[in-house]
Length: 640
Image (cartoon, rainbow, N blue to C red; front, side, top):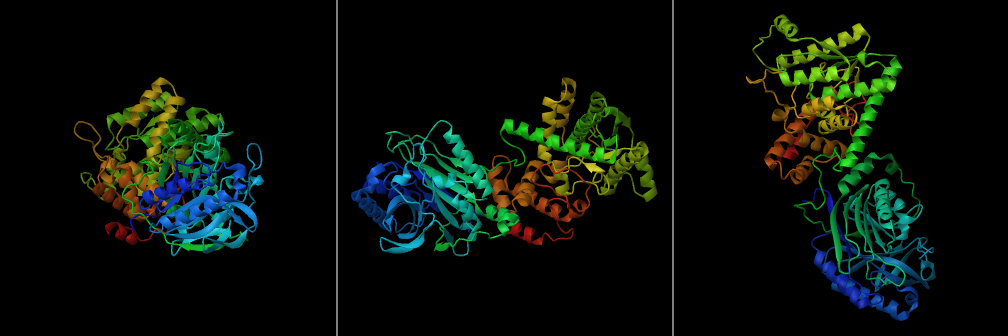
């Protein structure tokens, strides 16, 4: 299979004529045939066979018989299709009339789901015509098919539990406890809603928010399809609102107020839904007591070469500027509040930071200044130390000094080169051999100085390393890996720059903003190797490891979503198709996997630090992993 855990779903609101069942069935049949090889599931609106606005005509034998004939026509003429599709119609059963969804595939009726909650307020009068089906749990003979007639039906393909689905109808979603709340606990990963929801001012946005929230609380894919403008406009107007949501996210939304057919198609990541449910303790308990019919069906999986849904390059960074500002404000508050609480708890009034002029130490310094403001402490109690080494460039040094001075914290400078040269002599290392020893001696010297000054002056060493560096192990063990409180430990590299930008725009004056902007434009580097002859940075991290935006993409999708290497590579090729070729993405993913596994020992003993997002690699928080786990099966899949 080449669908990577995605299932293609569609919602179509076709042209219809109220009470003209023959016309409506033709529109349904044409849509099923048109989209048969494009989607695995196709959803039509509530009462789509007759139209929703038939009113008292629902009692007419002629209409009910015509609807049944239309259903026969639909079933018969779609017998050579594979798509599972759902249509709405009135059905009489046990002397009562029900508003139902009929589930059909390959010329077979799989089940009939009646509407549970009938709106009978304001503009709605459904109880005038229909009976509630919430207590129905029987079998019905419809067109010679004996099938379940119940709200409690889970449709499940053999061997693909994550492709199980259930059905509810319009008002069911608006109920205090929607039927789908029980369906998902019984294993339904997809919920289909046949609807006829009229348009009122602001109802459109409320409806969308309702779907977004319910799909999140139910951890499901939710497909919604409403009747369109072709319904009667005697008193109301229907817009044909179509939506596809997945776990709190709207994947696709259709155009409203169209007389013609409107179709939306997207992919639901049922593999991700199953992953999230497995982690959620709510889904570990089967506390739904009602009996359920389990109805098998044949899953027609559509191979996927290109996704229609958006795959974001930077999943840690919101694309909406307003959301980004809001996110940065929240994270900055969490970071500074966490540090303030720690200092208040230990009764400490001083902080020590190693400032390099790079992104991470800059953010850590800004967070510390904010924490001191919260505590009402003098910023002169922040000891910011710049420690030039063999790779320090004029640009980063100057920016570090300017920033320290402009922020009004205590500035100290200690040149580490003499101490490092002495240490090289002590351990018998040639200073001209620029290997890992050459680099790490500098990193450890800096943090020895920071810890010693903290002891001497009664302060706390604030860590600067970020989440991306921890994931890749791009930090010196017992060097910049260590601190007394690590404020950036769950902030990914792709977000660090935006946080600094947020502070630059909202928290500081123009002179500081100018320095921060230049820091944001500086290449990422540990500056542990001598620069080029012209003084430019020679050791660029992204030239060695690959782009951080790609590694953060892998980090998010592997840890947050549990994706396999093949799926991560597929998604990366979708997200970065205009930036990087697949060979490069493959190579960088190999680097990520190898380093993530081999560097776990550094994460097993990291300092305390605040969790700010959905991913944290602290062993006391979200991530527990043996330090000697093998990456073999991940690398094998990637090679294949």
